[in-house]
Length: 302
Length: 253
Ligand SMILES: Nc1ncnc2c1ncn2[C@@H]1O[C@H](COP(=O)(O)OP(=O)(O)O)[C@@H](O)[C@H]1O
Ligand SMILES: [Mg+2]
Image 1 (cartoon, rainbow over the protein chains, first blue to last red):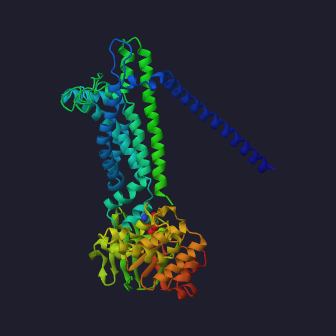
Image 2 (image 1 turned 45 degrees about the vertical axis):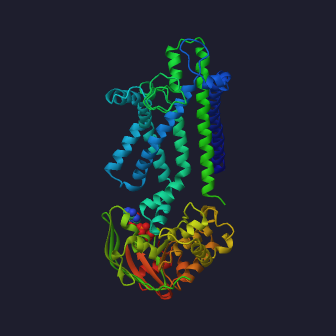
Image 3 (image 1 turned 180 degrees about the horizontal axis):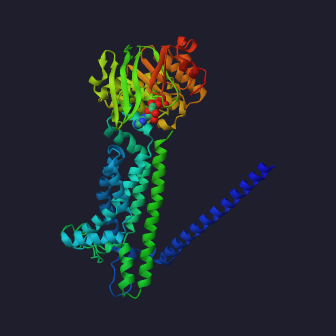
């Protein structure tokens, strides 16, 4: 009798917990969806406006576009990934597979954790003091890409390290028992096993890099020279590939027009840019899921 | 096509330490060629540790120190290149652990890394090895499927095939059936008996009946010591030590 009432109570608690948790999740989802819908909705008019997406920004007149900003955002993202992916892959492999447990790994892990929680404005200020001023690179894509790399490196290293560590020890033993070296085991067995998680992590971190503003304001700068895609003179400010030119990105553009913009259609340009940024980041997330799941399925494919 | 082997393994006065922990104490044990030696004993008594000494898998464990002599045939394994040693002494684990590759690639993986071979030769090895482990008919139409798509029992036989493909002389099995269903278990047991015709097999098992069914010799370990070793039939019927008897009759462990 006592036990049946106890189990009835446990069941009631379970029902209540289920209800409360469901409600919390529902609130979060509704809030997130509302934000996305609001941002994309208020900029929807500009989202498919080709002259906005490819046009040049205006200083004083209405009707400015975000062509250079859109290109700059992707260019900086690619450069940042080119810099940070090999480095963090190497660091993660070292930490997960080679380093012995000890003071060195503990220190490295602490440093990486601290760096990954460093506010991005601090990274940006460091970038300005060091790359922009000390090294004299000025506001440039190079300064910006390195600041973003500093920002991305610890996050990516952790993601990859965790992905590698999640591969069961059995897989390492299997490689070792077959006479593989640690390097062969890492390259041929562990990385392929961890690939779905690695790819997902890389794409998600790409989303964060793509939307980053604070680290770039004082490194890549706040001006977007008009780009001429037929210009391959790498020292010219209008050559898109020139890494020594200043390059405002979408996120920085939003910040700038809202803080000092004087164009009459300021609100429309700002919400249009925000909508484009949002759609890109949503796309990264969706791609991350699809690619991750594809790879996962390929690993266990019939 | 695979050569028959008859290489025994031996362990003489082996002591192993994990840091300060003395995990194996003065172990001396012969593992005769073309026989199955079963290692039994309660969890934590050092069975896996001993097994992993035989192909120097402990080399890479931090703080692990091995003293004494371990032989493969009449060679001291210290004198054999560890990667060579592991080709000659294969290992199968408790949990099936195929690589995240196709069934075909799983089987030929060890061979591939010994150098380029013509595809026809690899195809031949895949078929003969998979036949040997009784998996050929089940997988011959899906050699390109992932090894991870197989059932647990099939995965374990694939892992045995992977170990056999490089033609080892000795096969070490660490509780190879403890994660398998009864039917897969008996398939793996039959396979182990079969393989003992031309391999030396050392198997760790928690299952007394399994040791009794398939092994020629059984060694009972307790707290890092080899308590008793003898022909399986004898050890199970007339254990000489009280501890062995207690363990066999389930009074502890
Ligand atoms: N890498 C290791 N480091 C420290 N101690 C270990 C390690 N591996 C095993 N041990 C210890 O050695 C003893 C024997 O372990 P093991 O050989 O795995 O036992 P069994 O396989 O018989 O269950 C246990 O007490 C275990 O805790
Ligand atoms: Mg064990």
